[in-house]
Length: 112
Length: 112
Image (cartoon, rainbow over all chains, first blue to last red; front, side):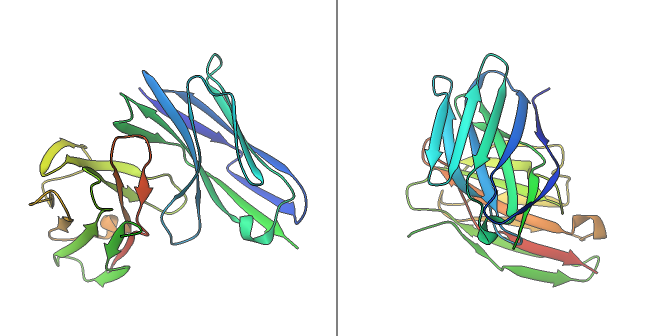
């Protein structure tokens, strides 16, 4: 069964600090892995997309890594801002991108 | 068309009533997906269209749920005889090729 597990479930950090969110997956055949940011009451917004051959991808203060051997990914947020408070969802795609498996998300709260 | 549009944003309905949601995709996005998301969880797959053809339905999609995409453009999701357990965010996502997905802001359904 295709599964995506994220940790931690929730995280509180102070503004300006860095944090790293984890994603482990068992999805086959792997197509790509995405990280989404979802504000409360809104749809997910794409942060990064990585294919099998990509190890790291950055989008501003967000840097995602992928280890396809261990089936792990991380999302690193640098110099956090209050607006980073949201849920971060790891999504793994199988079957040439046709089906998505979602993680449960990490709820990040950035405090002043 | 700059994004995926969903209507309404919020819907409150009495148990037993029927509701219908609409999703307008990005032009030329031939694949359209419906997801359901409950609080604190990642989205769960409901159904998927390629153009006007409904290619897959989740077991979550009971016989009270029906989705259409009559002309391969907008899609509707109808829930008949709503139950309190149907309360959730219903998300629509579209993609032209299965790589870059764009989500709508969702329809928040509350069944009272």
